[in-house]
Length: 364
Image (tube, rainbow, N blue to C red):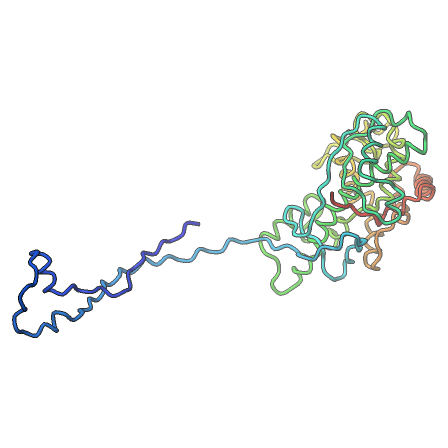
């Protein structure tokens, strides 16, 4: 904003030079004789000249302050602390801000694009990243695998599975972190909306944009809160492993399709669970977008209302989302129904995937 420049006025006194000395200096005559006999004290006194009155400056109205969008600000958790679960939907205060305006530190992930399984394993060794360490409480390095290596099928079953889980865990955690940031801002605005001051116009715009992305309404805050939430890593990893053959299916290798979704035409082009003969698998540019579409799908598709309701109930009880329990509400994810749920739970048990539900991303 341009600043008004105020003229600088000389506020000191201006002194009149004595007339007699002015005359002498002007003529260049030296004083060799005494001055005439008269009282020179008047001439030698300092005559104060009042400064000219400054012209009044034009009155400039103060600019109206631009509206700002206020976000939640909270302390950063210690690096070694296990992150607490988000507050329940009944009260408390949030820990995150909206992604584009977050004041809480957001972990930046580094994308990697390994061509082979051995190259992928080498990246994990370079950053000292093992599933054993994560189970013991170590943070997960913020690396994001862009694509599934073509030769995973050539690895032994246990090695292939371990590589797949190790690769997908930080991807899921990063997606969940962004969703959780939106959720905590949403909870903050919901509490503020119920207060006497309400929310600002810009906050209302943010809320409406969030609701639009989640196929809901800004006037149905409780429903929106049920939708904007995380998917437990144990559940996401188990489903992606089953649906993609642990990264060996043709759809996974050629289109990063890890979650059994098919192409769907709609306002958001949302992928839905694949069924034999139902359509072509939905391809994605990278693994991260596939995971994001999967989480979005569970948070918006009408078939998964029961899943979202059960997750909200856990929040109300102060519990973190439990993947083993929540998978029981995805009977419509596969035409196999309960058999599919049992299979996913078996994978979660055999590979101890619930150990990763409390995992967190570190920073380099």
